[in-house]
Structure formats: structure tokens, C-alpha cells
Image (cartoon, rainbow, N blue to C red):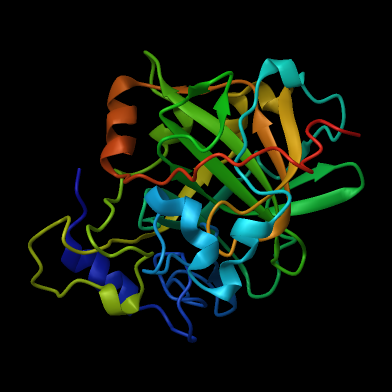
Length: 305
């Protein structure tokens, strides 16, 4: 089912802008017409998708510009290959709060695949669903999908991988929960909550912003980006699909796109979330290649206390 571009265009024009572009499908600080004045949505996708880098040339990111140097010189770069020979973590068990409540946000495409960004009060992330481990808590800013999966396990790479991005109380990325996706038989209850996939935009190379809104008379569903605002979903359903992350790998890593910032705690669920065949085809149809080359294990402290 496709959403008429003219309707999406009209709903986005009702939003308010506050400046620089983000990765929400809207510019940073855009506010839905159905939200209070100080409710905003912030990007949760990999760092700004600039035109000077590409996933299929990730080996060269560090040479593109000085701000990307960590991609080349970092000691805890992500993703990495995992295996049961690593064992599973007996430490840093994550617990979840607020995931069982419905959240509202923008359903969009971050330029490489499907993405969902949660609404929250301006400069207040602590009202969002949270994940805690040890004595630390981080807040779910949103999620996006990579295809194929970033992390291989035992040499096998799933068809896609969902990244649930968590930030600290000031909004800085702190942890990512990675859930691998593969096709099975039955529909995935989590995905059944969502409207149809929003397509990526050929040649855009970044997330859509206000300047990319389609004209009211646009006819092509794929020539322009789309944003579907005010979508409700229950995040607990994705946890249910992977046994509430009861078994997992964890390590100290980085963002998987420039500037490859380190200081990210990764949790990779052992269980795979299964979709129906049609759901997976829809995911892959809304994606373009977005898996960074796996990095050598160095100071990642896989499953360490």
C-alpha cells in the first residue's frame, strides 16, 4: 500500500523547522502537527550520510577527511565477526523499561533502509524507553535497518540487521542493540504494526530533509523521499522475538559509519528475529547496501566483565 505523496507533503509542511539537517526524515527539531510545541524527533540513524563516503568503499573512509580518521586508527571499530567460540556474555545483562508502552514517531527511510525515530520532549531523552546494564541507563532514540547484516556469526551473515540506538541523558549515542533478521514462515508481529516500507531514494545518498519534499503534483513513489509521521508502535514485540535478549554477545565498539565514533557498548542478540518471506522481500526492496566491512578484533573486550 502506498501513501499519496501529496498527503505526505502536506503533513510535513505543517511541521516547524529549527535549522540543521538530521536523519529523521525531517530536519532537526521538526515538530509534528499533532504534538505539543516542545515535542521533537531526533535522528537515530548512523551519522550524517554525506556524499563523500559509501559503504562499498568503507576500507577507505579514514583517508577521506580528517574528521573520519577514527575509522582508520580506532582500536574498537565496529562491526566485528562473532562466533559461539567467543562464548556468550555472562556480564552486562541488559534490562528494559518502558518498552511495553506504545511510542510514537516518524516512519521513514534513512537513505539506505527503513528507520523509525521516536518523538520526545525537546532536550529530554529520559522519557523514552530505556535499556540498563551494570549501573548505566541509555534511552531508545529510534531504530534503523542495515542490509545485509553488519555482524556475521560463525561466518554466516543474516539478510538484514536492526539497530536499536540508545543515547545517554544528553542525547549522545551510548549503546546499540543489534538484532539479526532472516526470513522464516510466519509474519513478524513487530513489523505488522508498521505501514508499508518507505523506499530509499536512488542517488540521494543521505537521509531526506525538508528540501527533498516532493512537489504536490509528484507522481513517482520512488523518485522522492517520504516520511510517515505520528506512527504508533510497541517496542516490546521486537524483544519478544529474541527471547528478551536473554543470550547475547557484548563488546566495546563504535558507530558503523563516519566519523566512526568509539565509546559505544554493543549488544548483539544471539537469537535471530524471523520475518515472513514477503516481509523480508519488502525490507530488502526498501534497502540498498549498507554493511561496513568487518573490523579486526583489537581492544573490543568481547564478553569481558
